Image (cartoon, rainbow, N blue to C red):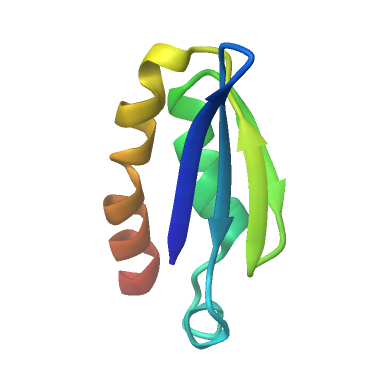
Length: 78
């Protein structure tokens, strides 16, 4: 799982990638990124293996990315 975030034009932008072995275990890049982007006041979507999204609050970039480990753990447990 890789989730990257950056600020473009004062807005947070995100991309997530999930390998095939993990998508088969229930991880979905779009669902991971929805949780991340929501923290920054935005939304996301995509396929199980790749997703992109954005937000409105650039100050929330680090907080949003901090949600990735919990999201992955919950999806794998669940």
